Image (cartoon, rainbow, N blue to C red):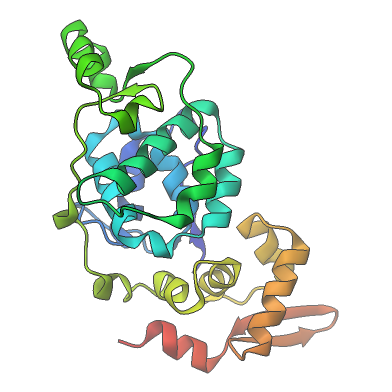
Length: 256
């Protein structure tokens, strides 16, 4: 089960609708089909921030998910992706994470976001948060005058900070998804990502390194830990060492 490729944060052809099946898989009640592949959650968050101005429903529901399930986010990886993202994406990510934390029914505090937020920067030229408002001078003036501080600090204007928790599934429902269950059991980490990618597929440390976008040394160390704990099984084929999930790991991730 490979990790689903989310649209690149810099891909101009990406549209918000491409992200709906991915969010649906991990617990947002969007209509339509869910992705059948494991989701790279941190990359999905960046892709959502990049498209936040185009789809209010996507943005608010994603912020609601982040407010409730921030403990499933790998803060270190989110930080690394944020640091490499374009300025515009970082500004919108700052607003997205701020909304998840500071809305009246938000998280209040989410340490997983702290380092990523330190890499976020405001836009050089302030503008309304959503593109549709940019088309109307009246709406633009309205938003400028009434913009909330959590948006203003990113040089974005918007006057609402309301989350939609009713659109988010319960934790019990989320933990039926094997890749999210791996994060719950192992913590949101490279180990959990290794397990998610290896599920239903034989692989090796070098392929995992390329797929996950982390160094071979870090991947090899994670694999060694997982083999040592009995969660991965290593089988030698000549000079190659293939990896597969142990029976215990498979049972933990796929049991009802």
